[in-house]
Length: 303
Image (cartoon, rainbow, N blue to C red; front, side, top):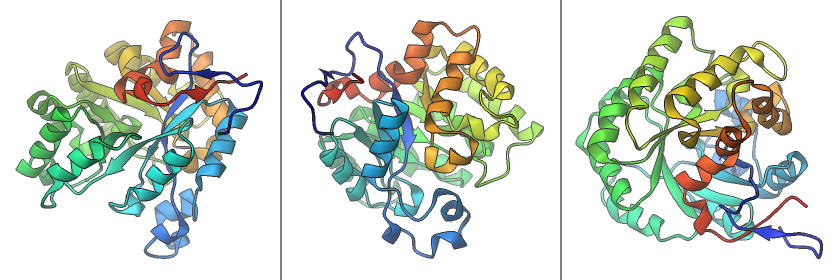
């Protein structure tokens, strides 16, 4: 965003707490291989989400910056997200997608790590054998060597594989959506799925490099803002991972039906037992440290 005479620029990591959304998607209408309305993802997320639209939404909600996670329907093409970050360096950094089974993927990761706005990569396979394959082990080890955080969404049934993978690779693993199903694209988790996922997250919390994203939690709520029936999930993650390894994300193009971006941020302020320092970590500090956002260009602070 272009600066104005009355605005103030601050760096990530300055004393003023910044609000960072760790989970947003940007994409073009041409990214879809079929008409979006014909797919569950497209019917929920919509035909496109341009950078200017997201930046405007963030300004209205007083969200300072966001990590743009390249969506699965964009394939392995990270150019649109990088271009958005180049045009809005005060707003966006990028987590890209690479095929871990492709030849030359380690060189591709090296090139990605050299991009000034690239801060991580994402793995989203729901195939259990992928996560136990040598290719995935090599991918995670390469990301660790390059200091690239790896956002993972393996499906709740595969969360149990993350703790041993994290230990073996030394990678910084960031679990999107707590690894849970993502309404309204999919039905919410039943008790069996939820119980198993939480047991796996407890095991993962003992791995130093592991992080969790409280992304899209309002979509799991049966109540309107401030979504009291998911507060216990927030408290449990903060208890097990600590606020310094827990980050907020909206996934707003998926969850817009459950509340505004401001509401999906502000419900964290209503949860008792989480003090201001912990909340500052969850709403920005953890993402800043995990993705190295303090190394990036100053962003425009709320004035």
